[in-house]
Length: 330
Image 1 (cartoon, rainbow, N blue to C red):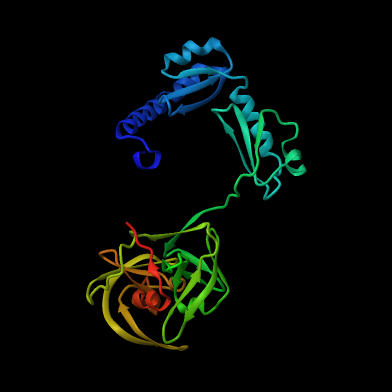
Image 2 (image 1 turned 90 degrees about the vertical axis):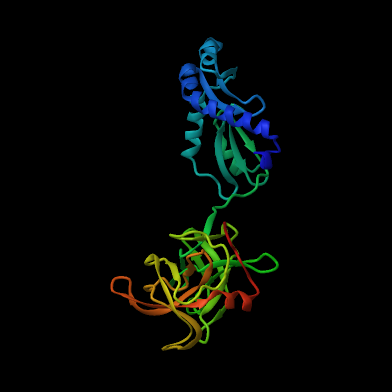
């Protein structure tokens, strides 16, 4: 609150106490208002819960709960009825982006991108207690880019790490045998962006440019903790990986600088582990026990039932080749 709202420490403490009290008495205050209830909201200037009502007859009952009553014209039940009527109508996309009850204004607000149109007028026609807010920004879904989550192109792979270039452009790093397929890749919440570089065989890495800003870059690893850096771990130490097929699995680093020869050709300077993996885990991240990014899954043998061997493409080479900086946590 001190940093975000510009409050002093004393003001922040008073506000927290006020918000705590408001939460504690809210249900009782609503019950005291009865059918006259018209909304309840916290007033940050007085640090008190305000309860809107349509009758002064309930003022004393509301005050007895610790809340401050104010008189308004429209009950919450009436606002809610109008809201539900809007819910049954088809909003004209992408013009109308949402509607809600605003309790401290005793109205329903409809948010609209741009100015008045006939479509908007038709959408709100005949509904009481509506205020239209024009020229509002468009809305979009947001989702975290998380290491180990599934990504989809012409096949399913796993997201490795998220990184940025010097200009701030965000990229997803994954396996090259995935990005070799080209095209636009998506996550569970929608499109991420197109392939913007790939190398396989010889190497096994690629990058996908995040062009859909609804995806938020993070240092998170699915099933594990966020990564703190990219210091290379020693052979014999613990390493864990996350994948969209088998989840979070751990083992040890068995060797570095291994050449691995697939049917498509050989890949050089790989790291060998006894962490299991299965199809769909490709491209997923490996992290050390000290939460340092190590690499992305290339391939291997066996499975997560009987065990096996997997190889990863070290992440530092990928970052260096593409001139990227890893997104790191806390």
